[in-house]
Length: 442
Image 1 (cartoon, rainbow, N blue to C red):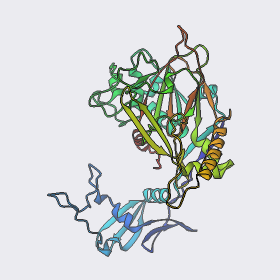
Image 2: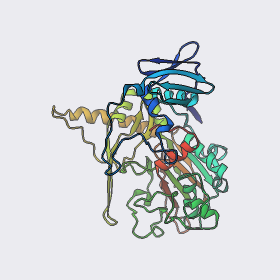
Image 3: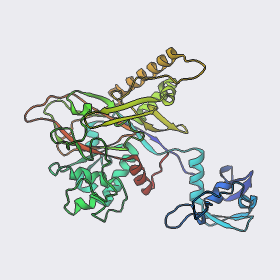
Image 4: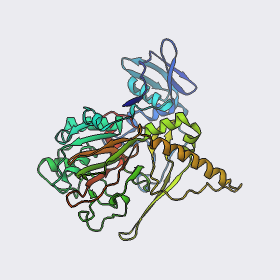
């Protein structure tokens, strides 16, 4: 297995505070370190936020009708520094209008680095094998461990670092309650003490619900329901089965729900009954594949970053028509943050329309060449993780990072290959990452 770390080293705190061109600058003894705009620092003072709701309280509006009364030209003294100093692990600033503010050194430096050069610490993987995953303390955990606090934190760290996690010994005879509990363990609030709002606590107390009326965590509700089943006879009445996952053919590597404006952040698969032959699951690290593409063919990488593709899902029987657009590879300040790739749900491409004419032939040629290079990388054995899932094996997949697919299989009386699962929203997943002090780049 090949791993590459995508990270940043944090430098030690500075010792001098200076004001230059309306910027708050900190310096080490040898060189300039980081800076932040004074306006940002002043507006970030905790006195500007409600201590309970964390909402801003320095926004001016009419209390009676809600109309804005914002002063677009606040007094210059508000953002002018009278004096500044370091006091232990705190920077203190006295503003010209008489207000004093304190900022922790750690917060100032972390904020400055995230603003100037945001980077995340992730393990990009290739060459992974079934045995490596099963024998890894980081990539494999038993179900009973995940549903407790220490296990939840470890699972979230694995998903953050690798984008994939194997959960073994998942109960499969409870109508999806264990699967919903897993979704709860990595979504919503980390405080899981009320069975009325947390599916995980409900499950711990013997409940078998997969949805709670007042729940704040658990599976994302989609056109496929909350917990879905690939056996259409088990799938909840009225939910959609208009997807190739309900067939027998092999499936190419893809991310799910590319036709949603914000695709789910997590896909949860539980093997209920494996096929006797075939049906192996395939996974790939989309971030690693994108970095390989960037290294081998920078032009193809830029094409897939800068071309919006269109995706759709239509199920007339249940009344759904979803569409969304986005690039295959999405970046923020050079960092890869999202993969959106599903050729089976992708609509024909249209070049961007301009009033100056369209060179459609060049558009299609460049896009086809870039996509062919992407497909070449996804087809390499070194990119693909092949796993023969056993009954009770659950794989958690970061859907906006890692892709999944499968080999074809045949249905037999004693071997129908049944899979169940659900989704977790990206917002839920990001919230849990932040609560574990794992930085998220939007």
